[in-house]
Image 1: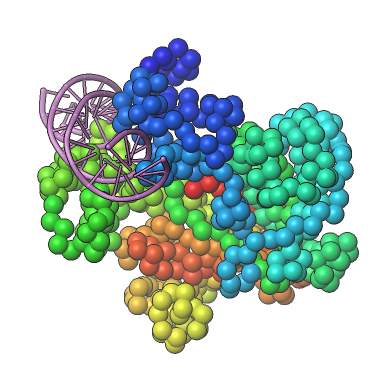
Image 2: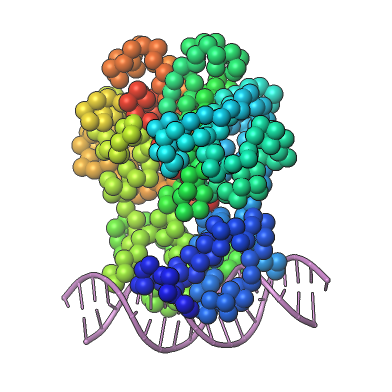
Length: 246
Length: 246
DNA sequence: AAGTGGTCTAGACCACCAT
DNA sequence: TGGTGGTCTAGACCACTTA
Protein backbone atom coordinates (compact mmCIF):
# COMPACT_ATOMS: atom_id res chain seq x y z
CA UNK A 1 0.00 0.00 0.00
CA UNK A 2 1.23 3.46 -0.88
CA UNK A 3 1.60 5.32 2.38
CA UNK A 4 3.33 8.39 1.00
CA UNK A 5 0.54 10.70 2.21
CA UNK A 6 0.54 9.14 5.64
CA UNK A 7 1.06 11.70 8.38
CA UNK A 8 1.79 9.09 11.02
CA UNK A 9 3.85 6.28 9.54
CA UNK A 10 3.41 4.25 12.71
CA UNK A 11 -0.37 4.20 12.42
CA UNK A 12 -1.86 0.76 11.73
CA UNK A 13 -2.64 -0.14 8.16
CA UNK A 14 -6.35 -0.45 8.76
CA UNK A 15 -6.47 3.13 10.08
CA UNK A 16 -4.79 4.18 6.89
CA UNK A 17 -7.40 2.33 4.84
CA UNK A 18 -10.14 3.93 6.92
CA UNK A 19 -8.65 7.35 6.31
CA UNK A 20 -8.55 6.79 2.56
CA UNK A 21 -12.13 5.55 2.47
CA UNK A 22 -13.29 8.48 4.61
CA UNK A 23 -11.47 10.82 2.27
CA UNK A 24 -13.40 9.52 -0.72
CA UNK A 25 -16.63 9.84 1.25
CA UNK A 26 -15.86 13.40 2.32
CA UNK A 27 -14.89 14.37 -1.22
CA UNK A 28 -18.28 13.23 -2.46
CA UNK A 29 -16.72 10.56 -4.67
CA UNK A 30 -19.11 8.04 -3.12
CA UNK A 31 -22.48 9.60 -2.34
CA UNK A 32 -25.01 8.58 0.30
CA UNK A 33 -26.92 5.53 -0.88
CA UNK A 34 -24.13 4.43 -3.24
CA UNK A 35 -22.52 1.04 -2.88
CA UNK A 36 -18.85 0.99 -1.95
CA UNK A 37 -16.55 -1.27 -3.97
CA UNK A 38 -16.63 -4.81 -2.56
CA UNK A 39 -14.19 -5.75 0.16
CA UNK A 40 -12.12 -7.90 -2.20
CA UNK A 41 -12.01 -5.00 -4.67
CA UNK A 42 -10.88 -2.57 -1.96
CA UNK A 43 -8.27 -5.06 -0.75
CA UNK A 44 -6.83 -5.28 -4.28
CA UNK A 45 -6.97 -1.52 -4.80
CA UNK A 46 -5.11 -0.72 -1.60
CA UNK A 47 -2.83 -3.76 -1.75
CA UNK A 48 -3.85 -5.11 1.65
CA UNK A 49 -5.60 -8.26 2.80
CA UNK A 50 -9.37 -8.51 3.09
CA UNK A 51 -9.08 -8.75 6.86
CA UNK A 52 -7.46 -5.33 6.99
CA UNK A 53 -10.17 -3.81 4.81
CA UNK A 54 -12.83 -5.38 7.04
CA UNK A 55 -11.18 -3.93 10.10
CA UNK A 56 -11.35 -0.44 8.57
CA UNK A 57 -14.95 -0.86 7.44
CA UNK A 58 -15.83 -2.25 10.90
CA UNK A 59 -15.01 1.13 12.41
CA UNK A 60 -16.97 3.04 9.79
CA UNK A 61 -19.93 0.75 10.45
CA UNK A 62 -19.61 1.38 14.20
CA UNK A 63 -19.78 5.10 13.45
CA UNK A 64 -22.73 4.55 11.10
CA UNK A 65 -20.85 6.18 8.27
CA UNK A 66 -21.52 3.14 6.10
CA UNK A 67 -23.97 0.25 6.33
CA UNK A 68 -23.30 -3.37 5.47
CA UNK A 69 -25.93 -5.61 3.88
CA UNK A 70 -24.94 -9.24 3.75
CA UNK A 71 -25.05 -10.54 0.20
CA UNK A 72 -25.68 -7.09 -1.28
CA UNK A 73 -22.73 -4.91 -0.40
CA UNK A 74 -21.65 -1.97 1.73
CA UNK A 75 -23.42 1.36 1.27
CA UNK A 76 -22.81 4.97 2.23
CA UNK A 77 -25.22 5.83 5.05
CA UNK A 78 -28.06 8.12 4.10
CA UNK A 79 -30.36 10.28 6.18
CA UNK A 80 -33.61 8.44 6.07
CA UNK A 81 -36.42 9.92 8.12
CA UNK A 82 -36.16 6.98 10.43
CA UNK A 83 -32.43 7.31 11.09
CA UNK A 84 -32.75 11.01 11.74
CA UNK A 85 -35.55 10.52 14.19
CA UNK A 86 -33.58 7.87 15.96
CA UNK A 87 -30.22 9.58 16.20
CA UNK A 88 -30.65 13.32 16.25
CA UNK A 89 -34.16 14.13 17.37
CA UNK A 90 -34.50 13.86 21.14
CA UNK A 91 -37.88 15.35 21.98
CA UNK A 92 -40.50 12.74 22.81
CA UNK A 93 -44.04 12.94 24.16
CA UNK A 94 -43.95 12.22 27.90
CA UNK A 95 -44.32 8.53 28.47
CA UNK A 96 -45.06 7.75 24.82
CA UNK A 97 -43.15 6.78 21.69
CA UNK A 98 -41.06 9.02 19.47
CA UNK A 99 -42.97 10.87 16.77
CA UNK A 100 -41.98 12.59 13.53
CA UNK A 101 -42.15 16.36 13.81
CA UNK A 102 -43.80 18.56 11.18
CA UNK A 103 -41.94 21.74 10.29
CA UNK A 104 -43.38 25.15 9.44
CA UNK A 105 -40.89 27.75 8.29
CA UNK A 106 -41.64 31.15 9.78
CA UNK A 107 -38.71 33.16 8.46
CA UNK A 108 -35.76 32.79 6.07
CA UNK A 109 -33.43 35.77 6.00
CA UNK A 110 -29.83 36.62 5.29
CA UNK A 111 -27.59 37.95 8.04
CA UNK A 112 -24.01 38.37 9.24
CA UNK A 113 -22.29 35.89 11.55
CA UNK A 114 -21.88 37.09 15.11
CA UNK A 115 -18.55 36.51 16.81
CA UNK A 116 -19.86 33.45 18.63
CA UNK A 117 -21.55 32.01 15.53
CA UNK A 118 -18.42 32.54 13.47
CA UNK A 119 -16.33 30.74 16.02
CA UNK A 120 -18.69 27.76 16.15
CA UNK A 121 -19.05 27.53 12.36
CA UNK A 122 -15.34 28.14 11.84
CA UNK A 123 -15.93 31.15 9.64
CA UNK A 124 -15.13 34.86 10.12
CA UNK A 125 -17.23 37.34 12.08
CA UNK A 126 -19.47 39.22 9.68
CA UNK A 127 -19.47 36.49 7.01
CA UNK A 128 -22.90 36.06 5.40
CA UNK A 129 -25.22 33.43 6.91
CA UNK A 130 -28.75 32.14 6.39
CA UNK A 131 -31.05 32.57 9.38
CA UNK A 132 -34.08 30.31 9.44
CA UNK A 133 -36.83 30.16 12.04
CA UNK A 134 -39.00 27.05 12.16
CA UNK A 135 -41.88 25.97 14.32
CA UNK A 136 -41.96 22.21 14.93
CA UNK A 137 -45.21 20.41 15.59
CA UNK A 138 -45.76 17.06 17.26
CA UNK A 139 -49.24 15.62 16.82
CA UNK A 140 -50.37 18.99 15.43
CA UNK A 141 -49.32 20.88 18.56
CA UNK A 142 -46.45 23.42 18.37
CA UNK A 143 -43.65 22.21 20.67
CA UNK A 144 -40.32 23.62 19.45
CA UNK A 145 -39.12 26.97 18.11
CA UNK A 146 -35.97 26.29 16.08
CA UNK A 147 -33.52 28.97 14.96
CA UNK A 148 -31.03 27.67 12.42
CA UNK A 149 -27.84 29.40 11.28
CA UNK A 150 -26.01 28.17 8.17
CA UNK A 151 -22.86 29.50 6.57
CA UNK A 152 -23.62 31.05 3.18
CA UNK A 153 -20.35 29.63 1.89
CA UNK A 154 -21.51 26.07 2.54
CA UNK A 155 -25.07 26.65 1.28
CA UNK A 156 -24.52 29.22 -1.50
CA UNK A 157 -27.80 28.98 -3.42
CA UNK A 158 -30.10 28.05 -0.55
CA UNK A 159 -33.27 30.10 -0.34
CA UNK A 160 -36.70 29.89 1.23
CA UNK A 161 -38.20 28.12 -1.77
CA UNK A 162 -35.56 25.38 -1.78
CA UNK A 163 -35.74 25.08 1.98
CA UNK A 164 -39.50 24.77 2.28
CA UNK A 165 -40.14 22.77 -0.88
CA UNK A 166 -37.65 20.03 -0.09
CA UNK A 167 -39.15 16.57 -0.28
CA UNK A 168 -37.43 15.10 2.72
CA UNK A 169 -35.86 16.10 6.03
CA UNK A 170 -33.66 19.15 6.42
CA UNK A 171 -30.56 17.02 7.02
CA UNK A 172 -31.39 14.93 3.98
CA UNK A 173 -31.35 18.13 1.93
CA UNK A 174 -27.99 19.20 3.40
CA UNK A 175 -26.67 15.81 2.30
CA UNK A 176 -28.28 15.54 -1.12
CA UNK A 177 -27.95 19.08 -2.34
CA UNK A 178 -24.78 20.24 -0.62
CA UNK A 179 -22.92 17.01 0.09
CA UNK A 180 -22.85 17.77 3.83
CA UNK A 181 -23.66 14.70 5.90
CA UNK A 182 -24.39 15.27 9.58
CA UNK A 183 -22.57 12.58 11.52
CA UNK A 184 -22.44 14.00 15.00
CA UNK A 185 -23.96 16.69 17.17
CA UNK A 186 -23.01 18.39 20.41
CA UNK A 187 -25.78 19.89 22.48
CA UNK A 188 -25.88 22.21 25.47
CA UNK A 189 -29.11 22.39 27.47
CA UNK A 190 -30.41 24.98 29.90
CA UNK A 191 -33.71 25.99 31.43
CA UNK A 192 -35.16 29.39 30.58
CA UNK A 193 -38.46 31.29 30.60
CA UNK A 194 -40.79 31.88 27.68
CA UNK A 195 -40.95 35.49 26.50
CA UNK A 196 -44.14 36.89 24.99
CA UNK A 197 -43.29 36.10 21.38
CA UNK A 198 -42.16 32.51 21.88
CA UNK A 199 -45.01 31.83 24.30
CA UNK A 200 -47.44 32.92 21.61
CA UNK A 201 -45.81 30.63 19.02
CA UNK A 202 -45.88 27.64 21.35
CA UNK A 203 -49.35 28.37 22.62
CA UNK A 204 -48.25 28.59 26.25
CA UNK A 205 -48.33 31.35 28.86
CA UNK A 206 -45.52 33.86 29.04
CA UNK A 207 -43.09 33.00 31.84
CA UNK A 208 -43.50 29.25 31.53
CA UNK A 209 -40.21 27.30 31.85
CA UNK A 210 -38.73 26.09 28.55
CA UNK A 211 -35.87 23.80 27.64
CA UNK A 212 -33.21 25.68 25.68
CA UNK A 213 -30.92 23.65 23.42
CA UNK A 214 -27.86 24.91 21.56
CA UNK A 215 -26.71 22.40 18.99
CA UNK A 216 -23.75 22.22 16.66
CA UNK A 217 -24.06 19.65 13.86
CA UNK A 218 -20.81 18.24 12.45
CA UNK A 219 -19.83 16.37 9.29
CA UNK A 220 -16.77 14.37 8.22
CA UNK A 221 -13.58 15.52 9.95
CA UNK A 222 -15.81 17.39 12.43
CA UNK A 223 -16.50 20.20 9.98
CA UNK A 224 -19.38 22.27 11.46
CA UNK A 225 -22.46 22.35 9.26
CA UNK A 226 -25.32 23.88 11.22
CA UNK A 227 -26.03 25.83 14.39
CA UNK A 228 -29.44 25.31 15.89
CA UNK A 229 -31.00 27.00 18.87
CA UNK A 230 -34.20 25.38 20.13
CA UNK A 231 -36.78 26.39 22.70
CA UNK A 232 -38.90 23.45 23.78
CA UNK A 233 -42.13 23.37 25.70
CA UNK A 234 -41.75 20.49 28.16
CA UNK A 235 -45.26 20.56 29.51
CA UNK A 236 -46.17 17.46 27.55
CA UNK A 237 -42.78 16.47 26.10
CA UNK A 238 -39.29 15.71 27.31
CA UNK A 239 -35.72 15.41 26.07
CA UNK A 240 -34.63 11.78 26.04
CA UNK A 241 -31.05 10.57 26.17
CA UNK A 242 -29.83 6.98 26.29
CA UNK A 243 -26.15 6.76 27.13
CA UNK A 244 -24.25 3.54 27.01
CA UNK A 245 -20.72 3.81 28.32
CA UNK A 246 -18.25 4.33 25.55
CA UNK B 1 -16.94 -25.24 22.62
CA UNK B 2 -19.79 -26.53 24.67
CA UNK B 3 -22.87 -24.74 23.48
CA UNK B 4 -25.41 -26.72 25.46
CA UNK B 5 -26.64 -23.63 27.31
CA UNK B 6 -26.96 -21.66 24.11
CA UNK B 7 -30.42 -20.22 23.65
CA UNK B 8 -29.85 -19.37 20.02
CA UNK B 9 -27.79 -22.12 18.40
CA UNK B 10 -27.41 -20.01 15.27
CA UNK B 11 -25.68 -17.18 17.14
CA UNK B 12 -22.02 -16.67 16.18
CA UNK B 13 -19.41 -18.27 18.37
CA UNK B 14 -17.90 -14.98 19.44
CA UNK B 15 -21.29 -13.81 20.76
CA UNK B 16 -21.41 -17.00 22.75
CA UNK B 17 -17.95 -16.29 24.18
CA UNK B 18 -19.03 -12.73 24.96
CA UNK B 19 -22.09 -14.05 26.75
CA UNK B 20 -20.01 -16.41 28.87
CA UNK B 21 -17.52 -13.71 29.79
CA UNK B 22 -20.33 -11.27 30.62
CA UNK B 23 -21.90 -13.95 32.77
CA UNK B 24 -18.76 -14.31 34.84
CA UNK B 25 -18.55 -10.54 35.15
CA UNK B 26 -22.19 -10.20 36.22
CA UNK B 27 -21.82 -13.04 38.74
CA UNK B 28 -18.96 -11.18 40.40
CA UNK B 29 -16.49 -13.94 39.57
CA UNK B 30 -14.19 -11.32 38.11
CA UNK B 31 -14.38 -8.04 40.04
CA UNK B 32 -13.70 -4.52 38.78
CA UNK B 33 -9.95 -3.95 38.60
CA UNK B 34 -9.19 -7.67 38.27
CA UNK B 35 -7.30 -8.99 35.29
CA UNK B 36 -9.20 -11.35 33.00
CA UNK B 37 -7.46 -14.57 31.95
CA UNK B 38 -5.22 -13.92 28.95
CA UNK B 39 -6.67 -14.30 25.49
CA UNK B 40 -4.75 -17.53 24.84
CA UNK B 41 -6.01 -18.87 28.16
CA UNK B 42 -9.63 -17.96 27.32
CA UNK B 43 -9.24 -19.51 23.88
CA UNK B 44 -8.10 -22.79 25.43
CA UNK B 45 -10.80 -22.68 28.09
CA UNK B 46 -13.62 -22.20 25.61
CA UNK B 47 -12.08 -24.32 22.88
CA UNK B 48 -12.06 -21.58 20.26
CA UNK B 49 -9.34 -19.73 18.39
CA UNK B 50 -7.73 -16.58 19.73
CA UNK B 51 -9.33 -14.57 16.93
CA UNK B 52 -12.76 -15.52 18.18
CA UNK B 53 -11.91 -14.55 21.75
CA UNK B 54 -10.55 -11.23 20.51
CA UNK B 55 -13.75 -10.59 18.61
CA UNK B 56 -15.77 -11.12 21.80
CA UNK B 57 -13.46 -8.94 23.90
CA UNK B 58 -13.54 -6.28 21.16
CA UNK B 59 -17.22 -5.76 21.82
CA UNK B 60 -16.78 -5.63 25.57
CA UNK B 61 -14.03 -3.06 25.09
CA UNK B 62 -16.32 -1.01 22.82
CA UNK B 63 -18.89 -1.05 25.62
CA UNK B 64 -16.18 -0.16 28.15
CA UNK B 65 -17.01 -3.22 30.18
CA UNK B 66 -13.35 -4.23 30.12
CA UNK B 67 -10.14 -2.34 29.33
CA UNK B 68 -7.13 -3.66 27.45
CA UNK B 69 -3.59 -2.70 28.34
CA UNK B 70 -1.03 -3.81 25.82
CA UNK B 71 1.62 -5.97 27.43
CA UNK B 72 -0.22 -6.13 30.77
CA UNK B 73 -3.56 -7.78 30.17
CA UNK B 74 -7.30 -7.13 30.03
CA UNK B 75 -9.03 -5.76 33.11
CA UNK B 76 -12.58 -5.39 34.36
CA UNK B 77 -13.53 -1.71 34.06
CA UNK B 78 -13.75 0.17 37.31
CA UNK B 79 -15.42 3.44 38.25
CA UNK B 80 -12.55 5.80 38.62
CA UNK B 81 -13.45 9.40 39.40
CA UNK B 82 -12.27 10.37 35.98
CA UNK B 83 -14.38 7.81 34.10
CA UNK B 84 -17.46 8.77 36.03
CA UNK B 85 -16.99 12.43 35.31
CA UNK B 86 -16.50 11.71 31.68
CA UNK B 87 -19.34 9.33 31.08
CA UNK B 88 -22.16 9.99 33.48
CA UNK B 89 -21.83 13.51 34.77
CA UNK B 90 -23.14 16.03 32.26
CA UNK B 91 -23.31 19.33 34.09
CA UNK B 92 -20.51 21.69 33.13
CA UNK B 93 -19.79 25.35 33.92
CA UNK B 94 -20.92 27.45 30.96
CA UNK B 95 -18.10 27.78 28.52
CA UNK B 96 -15.54 26.12 30.79
CA UNK B 97 -14.18 22.65 31.44
CA UNK B 98 -15.84 19.84 33.34
CA UNK B 99 -15.32 19.88 37.11
CA UNK B 100 -15.65 17.30 39.85
CA UNK B 101 -18.71 17.89 42.02
CA UNK B 102 -18.63 17.78 45.83
CA UNK B 103 -21.53 16.02 47.50
CA UNK B 104 -23.26 16.95 50.76
CA UNK B 105 -25.87 14.47 51.99
CA UNK B 106 -28.93 16.25 53.38
CA UNK B 107 -31.15 13.27 54.15
CA UNK B 108 -31.03 9.48 54.22
CA UNK B 109 -34.33 7.82 55.03
CA UNK B 110 -36.19 4.60 54.42
CA UNK B 111 -39.40 4.57 52.40
CA UNK B 112 -41.74 2.50 50.26
CA UNK B 113 -41.50 2.32 46.48
CA UNK B 114 -44.21 4.22 44.65
CA UNK B 115 -45.88 2.56 41.71
CA UNK B 116 -43.70 4.44 39.23
CA UNK B 117 -40.49 3.80 41.15
CA UNK B 118 -41.31 0.11 41.48
CA UNK B 119 -41.87 -0.16 37.75
CA UNK B 120 -38.58 1.57 36.93
CA UNK B 121 -36.56 -0.45 39.48
CA UNK B 122 -38.35 -3.67 38.53
CA UNK B 123 -39.54 -4.28 42.09
CA UNK B 124 -43.02 -4.32 43.64
CA UNK B 125 -44.99 -1.28 44.75
CA UNK B 126 -44.51 -0.79 48.49
CA UNK B 127 -41.14 -2.61 48.60
CA UNK B 128 -38.66 -0.88 50.93
CA UNK B 129 -36.29 1.66 49.37
CA UNK B 130 -33.57 4.04 50.51
CA UNK B 131 -34.28 7.71 49.79
CA UNK B 132 -31.24 9.96 49.75
CA UNK B 133 -31.12 13.70 49.14
CA UNK B 134 -27.80 15.25 48.15
CA UNK B 135 -26.70 18.74 47.34
CA UNK B 136 -23.94 18.87 44.71
CA UNK B 137 -21.45 21.71 44.63
CA UNK B 138 -19.31 22.89 41.74
CA UNK B 139 -16.52 25.28 42.72
CA UNK B 140 -18.10 25.60 46.17
CA UNK B 141 -21.43 26.80 44.77
CA UNK B 142 -24.56 24.61 45.14
CA UNK B 143 -25.79 23.68 41.65
CA UNK B 144 -27.75 20.41 41.83
CA UNK B 145 -30.32 18.91 44.20
CA UNK B 146 -30.18 15.14 43.75
CA UNK B 147 -32.85 12.73 45.01
CA UNK B 148 -31.73 9.13 44.82
CA UNK B 149 -33.92 6.04 45.21
CA UNK B 150 -32.33 2.62 45.74
CA UNK B 151 -33.99 -0.75 46.19
CA UNK B 152 -33.38 -2.07 49.70
CA UNK B 153 -33.06 -5.56 48.27
CA UNK B 154 -30.03 -4.50 46.20
CA UNK B 155 -28.46 -2.40 48.97
CA UNK B 156 -29.51 -4.30 52.12
CA UNK B 157 -27.10 -2.87 54.71
CA UNK B 158 -26.67 0.61 53.26
CA UNK B 159 -27.08 3.42 55.77
CA UNK B 160 -26.19 7.07 56.11
CA UNK B 161 -22.84 6.30 57.69
CA UNK B 162 -21.75 3.98 54.89
CA UNK B 163 -23.10 6.37 52.29
CA UNK B 164 -21.43 9.50 53.56
CA UNK B 165 -18.17 7.95 54.74
CA UNK B 166 -17.38 6.23 51.47
CA UNK B 167 -13.92 7.03 50.19
CA UNK B 168 -14.78 7.37 46.55
CA UNK B 169 -17.70 8.19 44.24
CA UNK B 170 -21.21 6.91 44.84
CA UNK B 171 -21.07 4.65 41.80
CA UNK B 172 -17.73 3.31 42.93
CA UNK B 173 -19.39 2.29 46.19
CA UNK B 174 -22.26 0.59 44.37
CA UNK B 175 -19.65 -1.38 42.48
CA UNK B 176 -17.25 -2.19 45.30
CA UNK B 177 -19.65 -2.90 48.10
CA UNK B 178 -22.65 -4.30 46.25
CA UNK B 179 -21.18 -5.60 42.99
CA UNK B 180 -23.46 -3.35 40.97
CA UNK B 181 -21.60 -1.68 38.09
CA UNK B 182 -23.37 1.14 36.32
CA UNK B 183 -22.85 0.65 32.59
CA UNK B 184 -25.58 2.75 31.07
CA UNK B 185 -28.04 5.49 31.93
CA UNK B 186 -31.21 6.80 30.39
CA UNK B 187 -32.17 10.38 31.14
CA UNK B 188 -35.30 12.44 30.59
CA UNK B 189 -34.98 16.22 30.80
CA UNK B 190 -37.56 18.93 31.31
CA UNK B 191 -37.66 22.56 32.36
CA UNK B 192 -39.38 23.47 35.60
CA UNK B 193 -39.53 26.27 38.19
CA UNK B 194 -37.74 26.39 41.53
CA UNK B 195 -40.01 26.08 44.54
CA UNK B 196 -39.15 27.82 47.80
CA UNK B 197 -37.29 24.93 49.36
CA UNK B 198 -35.12 24.04 46.36
CA UNK B 199 -34.45 27.70 45.62
CA UNK B 200 -33.12 28.10 49.14
CA UNK B 201 -30.84 25.07 48.76
CA UNK B 202 -29.47 26.29 45.44
CA UNK B 203 -29.16 29.87 46.58
CA UNK B 204 -31.40 31.20 43.80
CA UNK B 205 -34.71 33.04 43.79
CA UNK B 206 -37.96 31.12 43.90
CA UNK B 207 -39.53 30.82 40.46
CA UNK B 208 -36.25 30.65 38.59
CA UNK B 209 -36.20 28.08 35.74
CA UNK B 210 -34.40 24.82 36.56
CA UNK B 211 -33.36 21.82 34.53
CA UNK B 212 -35.10 18.67 35.79
CA UNK B 213 -33.43 15.32 35.05
CA UNK B 214 -34.89 11.87 35.68
CA UNK B 215 -32.23 9.22 35.39
CA UNK B 216 -32.28 5.44 35.51
CA UNK B 217 -28.87 3.81 35.97
CA UNK B 218 -28.49 0.26 34.61
CA UNK B 219 -26.01 -2.56 35.16
CA UNK B 220 -25.22 -5.80 33.30
CA UNK B 221 -28.23 -7.22 31.44
CA UNK B 222 -29.88 -3.80 31.90
CA UNK B 223 -30.74 -4.49 35.52
CA UNK B 224 -31.85 -1.16 37.05
CA UNK B 225 -29.65 -0.02 39.94
CA UNK B 226 -30.54 3.56 40.81
CA UNK B 227 -33.21 6.18 40.21
CA UNK B 228 -32.05 9.75 40.40
CA UNK B 229 -34.04 12.93 40.12
CA UNK B 230 -31.99 16.10 39.72
CA UNK B 231 -32.84 19.78 39.77
CA UNK B 232 -30.11 21.88 38.23
CA UNK B 233 -29.56 25.60 38.31
CA UNK B 234 -28.51 26.53 34.78
CA UNK B 235 -27.71 30.15 35.49
CA UNK B 236 -24.00 29.43 35.32
CA UNK B 237 -23.98 25.80 34.20
CA UNK B 238 -25.38 23.69 31.39
CA UNK B 239 -26.06 20.07 30.45
CA UNK B 240 -23.61 18.91 27.81
CA UNK B 241 -24.21 16.04 25.40
CA UNK B 242 -21.90 14.83 22.63
CA UNK B 243 -23.64 12.41 20.32
CA UNK B 244 -21.81 10.56 17.63
CA UNK B 245 -24.06 8.56 15.38
CA UNK B 246 -24.21 4.95 16.45
C1' DA C 1 -24.68 -19.82 -10.04
C1' DA C 2 -21.99 -15.97 -8.95
C1' DG C 3 -20.93 -12.38 -5.88
C1' DT C 4 -21.29 -10.20 -1.48
C1' DG C 5 -20.58 -9.82 3.42
C1' DG C 6 -20.11 -12.88 8.07
C1' DT C 7 -17.59 -16.23 10.79
C1' DC C 8 -13.73 -18.84 12.22
C1' DT C 9 -9.23 -20.57 12.12
C1' DA C 10 -3.99 -20.70 12.34
C1' DG C 11 0.03 -18.55 12.39
C1' DA C 12 3.56 -14.81 11.89
C1' DC C 13 5.40 -10.79 13.61
C1' DC C 14 5.41 -6.49 16.41
C1' DA C 15 5.05 -3.36 20.62
C1' DC C 16 4.76 -3.08 25.26
C1' DC C 17 5.33 -4.43 30.15
C1' DA C 18 7.02 -6.86 34.06
C1' DT C 19 10.88 -9.37 36.05
C1' DT D 1 13.32 -12.76 28.67
C1' DG D 2 8.71 -14.35 28.63
C1' DG D 3 4.03 -13.09 28.50
C1' DT D 4 0.54 -9.93 27.05
C1' DG D 5 -2.21 -7.55 23.73
C1' DG D 6 -2.04 -5.36 18.59
C1' DT D 7 -1.66 -5.97 13.64
C1' DC D 8 -1.78 -8.40 9.41
C1' DT D 9 -2.23 -12.19 6.44
C1' DA D 10 -4.35 -16.23 3.87
C1' DG D 11 -7.73 -19.26 3.33
C1' DA D 12 -11.92 -22.08 4.33
C1' DC D 13 -16.63 -22.21 4.80
C1' DC D 14 -21.31 -20.20 5.58
C1' DA D 15 -25.50 -17.12 4.72
C1' DC D 16 -27.69 -14.08 1.99
C1' DT D 17 -29.02 -11.58 -2.34
C1' DT D 18 -29.57 -11.08 -7.15
C1' DA D 19 -30.15 -12.67 -11.53
